[in-house]
Image 1 (tube, rainbow, N blue to C red):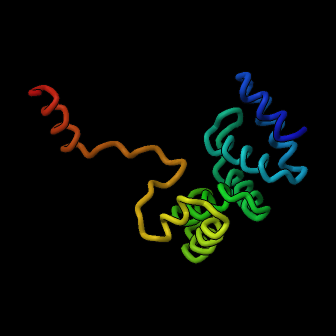
Image 2 (image 1 turned 90 degrees about the vertical axis):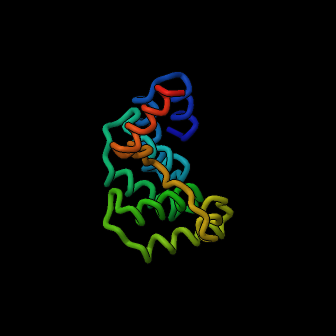
Length: 139
């Protein structure tokens, strides 16, 4: 199996087959497949969600030089998602992603706020939601 096999299954709406193809290619050392399989596990699309296993595959892909995996791994380490919080390692991966050309990693290092990946927007605070609803009613 190759990364392309997984991509084709995904394009044709077969997420379980895509996950299986990416897993096989990931186990064979394909960094792109490792990243794709990690995303599959993180988002429960074609495979059961498993944060620790997703972290494992993001780390393998990052170590193999995949710059999106390097950035994602940094954010996961900052947040403690699928792992313990480790600011030192997170910073190392963020620097590595930035020096590899990852634009968002560069912006984060420059101090610009960028929302973390793989996290839904938090629900609004109760009072803020009520204010927004009241504003819509009176508009």
